[in-house]
Image (tube, rainbow, N blue to C red):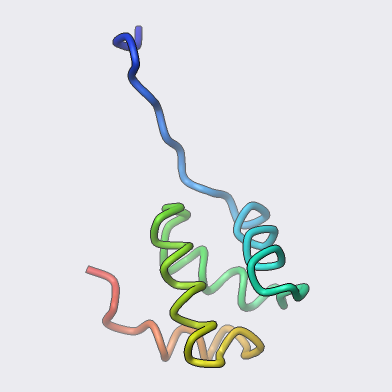
Length: 77
């Protein structure tokens, strides 16, 4: 039983991440991009948002998964 006011948050699945990237970037993301973001963030909505913002600011949202993994390597703690 949940305590009053308790919110149970679950991670995003890969399809949720795809929809978020599409809405945020105005593009249909390649599956490799969605998979890389999901894998690196484990679906954590806060991390997904931050990674998408990071990639957008660095002009990497149109790249493939290999580029994304290289960019994110070592950033997750």
